[in-house]
Length: 219
Image (cartoon, rainbow, N blue to C red; front, side, top):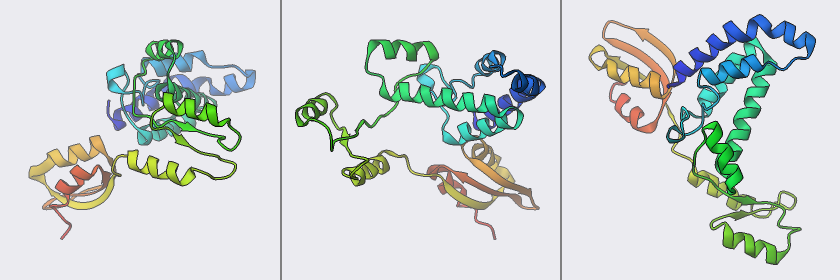
């Protein structure tokens, strides 16, 4: 599943399931189980779950666009969807016990890179902290109250993040339509115009694709 496919599926759910029942559900204060079922059938409940665990393996951009699409039809369902995705990713990144792993298996969530952060070190017992560090190798110790460790946490997060997408404005020859297709599949296209010599394309794409596209600058 690509981003545009996910958004199209969300629009279908919004148009066919959410919008027709939104007013009635709000009036009755009713939780829409039909909406959750439809989202599951469309493969959107596992939108950001890794592919090797049965999910779509998409990221924050897809999540935000799908949520926005749902919110246009029923803001309550969009909120429930956000809570589901947030709870799922908490389980994905923090599962340690057999019970948590069983839940992950049930909802189709797998392992993703994680960074364990231990808060409230200003009030924690030093012996307990040492025990936690022995169990959680590479954990970052912080105190939201005093600010201790926050700089180290920021640095650790920045190091773990993948290289950010890059903005490009290029004129792609018609013979390289494959690059335009890849930009739609892997990035966020904001402008497309067809000229005499090629396709004017403005988009944000992964660095490796940006390098290929930048071979065709706008004259």
